[in-house]
Amino acid sequence: MHDPRFKRLLQEFFAEFFRLFFPSWAERFDFNDVEWLDKELISDALQGESRFVDVVAKLATREPVSGPDRRSEESWLALVHVEIEAADKVAPLRQRMFHYYEPLRRRHGLPVLPIGVYLRVGLEGIGWDVYEEYFWEHQLVRFNYPYVGLPALDAEQYMRQDNWLGVALAALMRVSKERRIALAGEALQRLVHCPENAYRKTLLCECLSAYLPLDDDQRQQFEDMVRNHPDSEVQAMEMGLLDQIEQRGLERGKLEGKLEGKLEGKLEGKLEGQRELVRKQLETRFGPLPPSVAAHLETLSSEQLTALGCALVSAASLNELGLGISANGG
Image (tube, rainbow, N blue to C red; front, side, top):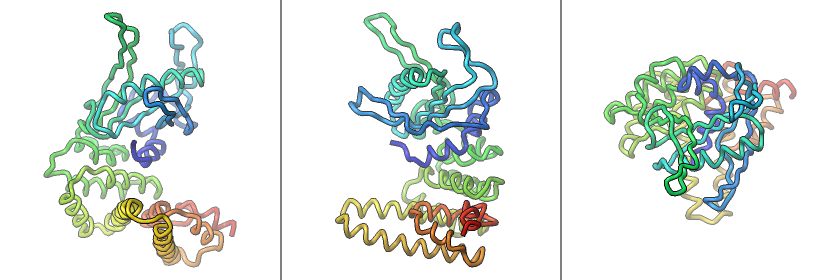
């Protein structure tokens, strides 16, 4: 099961994903109006259960897509289905890509472009994979789909580009063990100062920090590097994300070892303290908060409060943080 953060990242940087890995296709899609089909539930006969597909986008094309037999009516709308594989095996994704294609195609009556993404070991680089089925010597099915295997791509190459998604995903790409921490620091500094808005910046930095493949010793070195980084904005952004990751680990451990009632009380206390800290940071930066903004803070989860605190590093207004409308209405 992949982390939902990668799904959020992919949806936010969907056009950048195509420009990064499939640039010739990027020119053939219209990314100005993308409809996300988040609740595509498909029955998985192999697992005996139903499963939501990872990412399905419905969008217009800049040139028509022919029907499956190349003779039926052309379409100016298409679906793009991206399935994310975080496990260390290739075969399960192959089957899923095939089994999800036909229901999506039939349900929506639109051409479907399926893409597989490997976050860990798997197929290497960017290419095409195939799923086949046979009856004796007869081939009954041959299903082709493109894939992106992040671990085999050159981190240095993507980190130097101005596609900010590529800079963040460099954390999942190939780099020597000795170079990994330094590269992460350089990538983080680029992301903190990139021209994206505060929310998108936070998503990118969170991706880099969360997916960086480090052992315990390397993780400690990375945290020390961040704490002593000469760029104060890098320190502020990343320490907020590190606190978030640490908090998730603590909560997971407590869920395994303590009664639900006690856990809820402790988590609620920590959440209230976190909420008060963010409230003070907002007031220090922007002055007294309108009642509607203060009320909105009461509805935020720990993860949302952490993201808001990280976004404060570079935000110039409440509006940039997504709080301006609430403020005006208070």
